[in-house]
Image 1 (tube, one colour):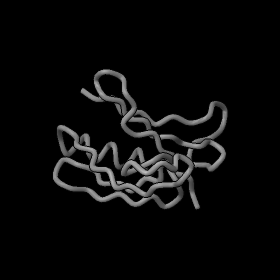
Image 2 (tube, one colour):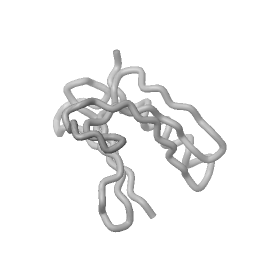
Image 3 (cartoon, rainbow, N blue to C red):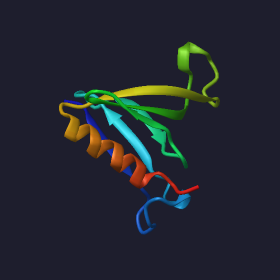
Image 4 (cartoon, one colour):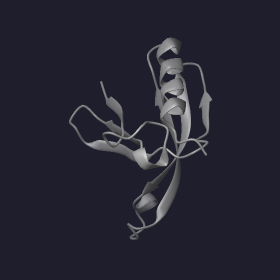
Length: 99
């Protein structure tokens, strides 16, 4: 089972840019698979048991040597049930900063 968490700065209300909501996904061994900030008006789509979201991440996607570039990536986050999928989608929208 992978671990997904959304973290914000302490003492700052969620859904604000100052809270810097960050999505972190780790695999079973603890390796970080996704570390991305939620941004205003983040787009999510719902599939059968999955949430599709577009994240902006730092790093070298595709093996390019530039680690300071922002990379736009689409992630498919699979859940066990549609109920879990709906819960995750609502939490992402709840924590995303208001534009």
